Structure formats: structure tokens, C-alpha cells
Amino acid sequence: MSEKKKKPIDLKNLEQEEKLKYEIAEELGLLDRVLQDGWKSLSSKETGRIGGLVTKRRKEKRSKNKLSEKVE
Image: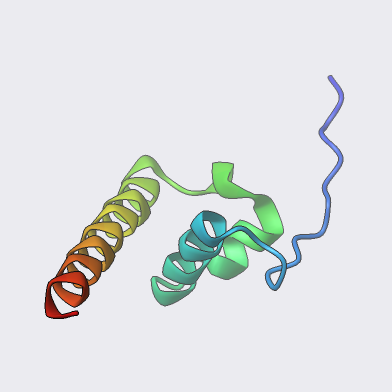
């Protein structure tokens, strides 16, 4: 079985969605493991936690945008 080629991840040149995932992984202390072994190295509990926080932050951002639109 061949292993996928590992490309180094440039954290400065990510799309906003990807950047958010990596930021949350860093906050949870999982970034080193993700960079070394990939997302597959995380447990389902850990990836679920990241996904939940991504969703929470998206909702917060949308509600802030709606509030700022009402003020203007």
C-alpha cells in the first residue's frame, strides 16, 4: 500500500474555513499532532469538539454581522 505524499502545511496561506480549524486545534493543544500526523491521528471525540467549536464560532460571527447591519 502506498502512503499519500505529505505536503507541508502553510498556515499563513489557508482559506478562512481551514484557518479556523487549525486555530481551534491549536487552542485545544492538538495542532502539533495534526501537523505531524494529520487529522486522522485525532480521535472522533477530538474532531467532534473541533467541529462543534467551528459551528459555534460561525454562528457567533453571523449574529455579530446581523447586529452590525441593524445598527447601520
